Length: 496
Ligand code: C2O
Ligand code: CU
Ligand code: CU
Figure 1: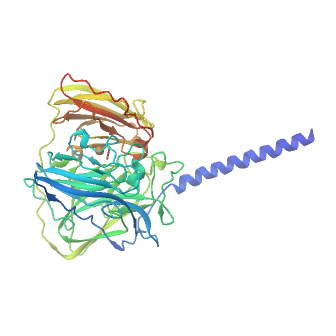
Figure 2: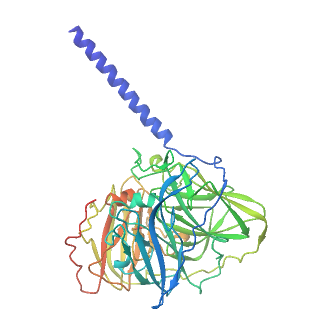
Figure 3: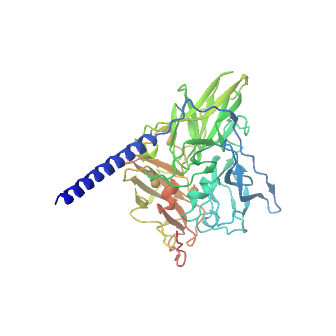
């Protein structure tokens, strides 16, 4: 009896120790989950600017680009090389540029040693050229999609989209920009790398010199890193030689949501979003971007000053494990002692999207929760939606859980009709292909399906937090001619 009591006491003690230990672990995880690099970044490296992709025009008048997906290594200031993936280089890829109206052909060669794809995020194009999970490029193979660029000038991007592997491929470094140019557009700073500078912003976690690709225990959103890279540069500064500089910011992170502001709280103008320029410049002091989203901003500098672009904490919602409390020093702008004059930002930039006056052919609802949409996981063998060519639909998207999500649609640029029943803020009144959904938010989108119908080739819609996307938070739609049925996707189901 006494022995039994003793044993019981020991057991109780053990349980108490375990509980305290686990509680401590939770508390420690909570505290250590917060990242803060403000004031700690040295800004000792010049910002790398991705090279412009070379191209030539072939006999059929197509602008031809050649891209090779390859392995390499990069200097991220870790004291040794970091194994990375890149396109025509060790990390990230060159910036493609084509004019509205031009035909393009891109030869994408896969030298990775494993299957990948390249998707043209934000591009309006035939589904067979889209580069989603149904257009795999096998190792050693070349895929050569071709299409005509027909959409407003915009900062688009490209990245892999292999089924269930997108997070890994993007995280290792496969991403690049694709600018659509329009010579008839308004006069904005436009000298590449001088007063028109891309900022591909990513957060990384390291394990020694290596990129840490393990998943944090509490990071259900996916990898959240403690180091910011801009165009692959840690601790970057940019020498500015003009009075105004246009920054084209891309959140190419797996899960990180940023809220960009300058250290002195100065105002800057948002001039463009995902799919093109805004109707007019919108002055802001801070701006939120979720993975996949872009913003073009114009900042004014005074001679000789230094100003730091920072991120966080977020104001739209609060979730420590989604990184909302984190703060980062992102980039230092160093103005020269004399700055060349820049044109003033034009008061009118581009026509506003006006899909609201069209007839709505269908209203659909999307509930984003966990890693499913409307309770269903992605099935590459299932068409979720068939939209009719030349019609406009209303898509109502709601985040119904406590995790952040966003919603990206291939092929179309949409108009945000409302956010939680209100008109969207001015900086969200341009064309968008990705919209952020903090917990509880509901957005109403208007989408017009034009030009390309194909009952057999689906486009994707999905959460662009890449772990969610890979885990099944994605669906497929086709665009069909009036009266046509979607093709059967028999035999198209892929396993994760
Ligand atoms: Cu940025 Cu489905 O993609
Ligand atoms: Cu996309
Ligand atoms: Cu999500």
